Length: 363
Image (cartoon, rainbow, N blue to C red):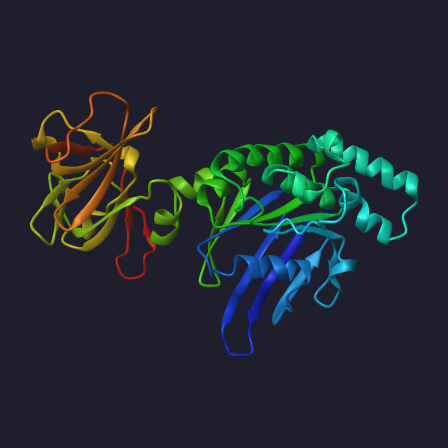
């Protein structure tokens, strides 16, 4: 096991495109860290730099105490699992698992012991004689994980390994990967564009956008205290509702939108009295939009689409030029075309600068 340290790591391509703009953070020994962001944000490029598959333009990369900027991938003591399973179709599961070990000239008894151990851990015992074409997608992914596992590396690198699986298999494999990490305690860096996957798998998460690190923290800290508007709207499903307007203080706080609509804000909204009359972005997560007993205590929005999903109901609402989503408990369903009175729950407002997007808090 080893920690991974990135000190101002940069990747600039020959055409001048900046793939990664100065990433600096540490993956602790035995930590499961997730890199997340939309397509093209630089997360896979960063992972490939750690693996040695992309040259580092500037900065320093350490695995353990060793600087590995110029070290070949095979000498970094890492194992990588790719988005494509990359299994050898003509080999059995056992041969796929053992191939890298045999290539190194490892003694046959040790190879057999490692393959058996990985197969038991991943539930592949009964599949060792099959070829990849005879396996399901989830089984192939377990073989790809096992091929990395048998190497017993210092660091596991996983590049969107579940993106080819259906939703049910993805959920199951997330649990398997978390269990595997708990058993092994090996340092793991995991890349995904799926924010739900990031929230459920990461002990810490690095959120990236356009080659830059936006925020690094635990899943719940990112969800509850996003550093900027991008992190706030990227993490969470459904996404955070965002309303821009003037904040007005007249006893309580009110958000006045440009179309004349007004939204009463809860008493504990993180606003400074000096901001009276200032235009701000106010974010509210769907679970913090609650039914109001009286529209005088809240505001009304028009129900457009209702999505009952069993344990909860997503209500899509029209509110002037804005679209809102409320997450409500199961019960009588609101009807499309009808007005729904809503209020914002205490503690439910996040405030952002409309120009920079930076989160604003009361000092």
